Image (tube, rainbow, N blue to C red; front, top):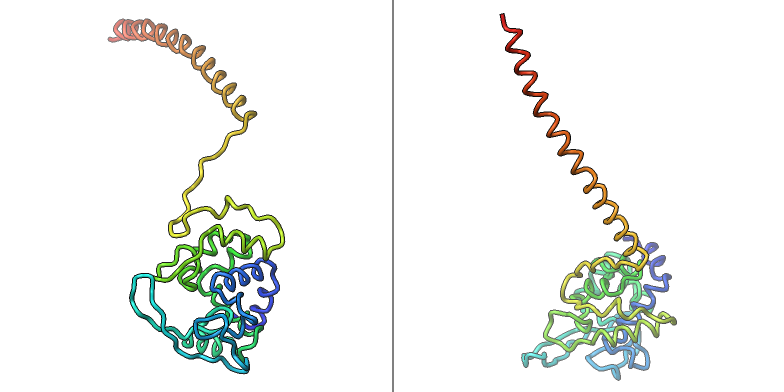
Length: 231
C-alpha cells in the first residue's frame, strides 16, 4: 500500500477513532505527548522525533515471567516492526504523522482496516489484539483492557453515541449468527399462510382418494377388454 493510500485512510473518522482507542489502551494517551512516550512509562518523553528512541526496558508479564520490550511512540512500535514499516512505506522520521501512517499500515496488515471503515469495531478489535497486547482478547501474558473500556474510548473519539451491544461479544471467539427476529406483523402473516396451506391440504386429500377409487375399476375393465380382443 502506497503512502498516498495510507493518507486517504488516515483522514477517515472511524480510523481516527480507532487510533485514539489504541493510544488509550496502550496507555500512551496519559503522556504529555503520546507520540514521545518510550521506555514503558508515559512520563518518559523523547526529546526529538526526528528518529525513534528505541531503548529496551524490562517488565514482568501477568504469568510472572520477566520480559523486555523496545516499544516506543503513541502506538508502541517495536523496533523491528517500525524499521520494516519505515522501509516499506518510506517513513523518514518518527513524527506524529509518520506514526499515524505506520499504525494505519499495521491495521491494513492485520485485516482490521476494512472493518474499521465499515464501522465494525468489534471485529477490528478481534483482528488487532495480536498486534496490540492491550486490546481485549489478546493472547499475550500482558494486561488487557475490557470491552467496556473500548466502548467508552470509541464513544469519546467518535463524538457520538456508540451501539454498545454491538461490541459486547467475546473478542477471542468468532461471531455466532444471531437468530432472525420476527415482528408481530410477520407472525400474523405466517400463521395465516400456515392455515391456508392446511386448508389446501385438507381439500386435496379427498380428491386424491376419489382419483384412486375411480382408477381401480377402470384398470379392471381395461384388463377384461384386452382378454376379449385376444385372437
